[in-house]
Image (cartoon, rainbow, N blue to C red; front, side):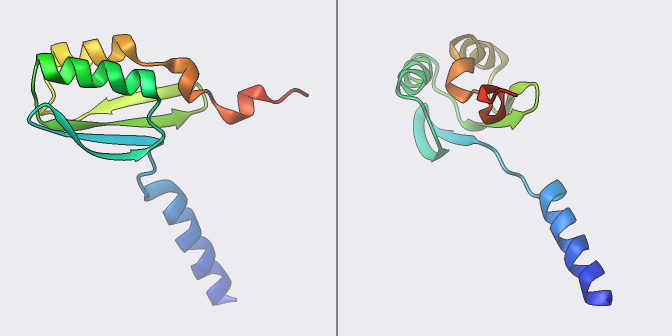
Length: 103
C-alpha cells in the first residue's frame, strides 16, 4: 500500500514541478543556438530578423495553457526585443489541441 502512495506522489510531483515548454529557443550573440520543440517557419524568420538587427543573448520559452499560450523570456533579453517578439508571435500556430474538439 505504501508503494502505491509513493508512486502517486512521484507522478504528481512530476506533473507539477517539471518544466515542460512547448518551445524553447536560446540565442547567443544574436544567432539562434538551440531550439527544442515546434518552431513555425514564419515565426522563426521574424525572430532571426529581430535578432540580427539587435543582437542579444538569452532565451525564451512558450508554454501551452488552458487560456492560450504564454511567452516567458530570460532577464538577458532586452524589453524592446521582448515586445517585438511578442508582436510577431503566431498565436494560431500554437493553438490548444483541445480547443479544436466539439461536444
